[in-house]
Image 1: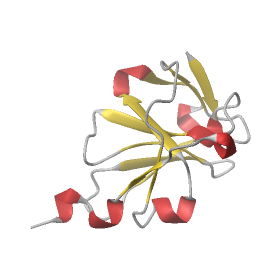
Image 2: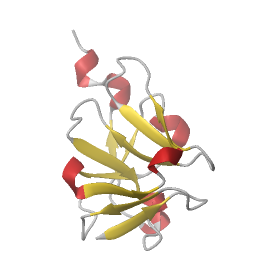
Image 3: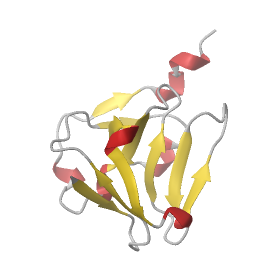
Image 4: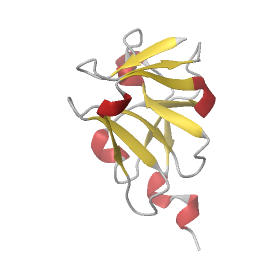
Length: 119
């Protein structure tokens, strides 16, 4: 288990993950603005342990994806992507034991050309 926390500590979560196998950034309209480096786990491997009442939900466009932020410090903690709502993406910068500036092989997810937007 790894601990995730926002900047002010109002929101905390436990993530059932040992190693960060998939590390990514996304170029969609929200992700390019927040600039976070993320990883992803199944929903059952992500559990809010503190501050669920401090989380704010933000949705846009199709309103399928759910983006969560701490209402106190504004930090993006996690999201459920619309391509697979059964997964939880999380902000690697919120893991105290991980230095996201030392990560190599960061994949780019092409959210700007999201497959669900293609006709």
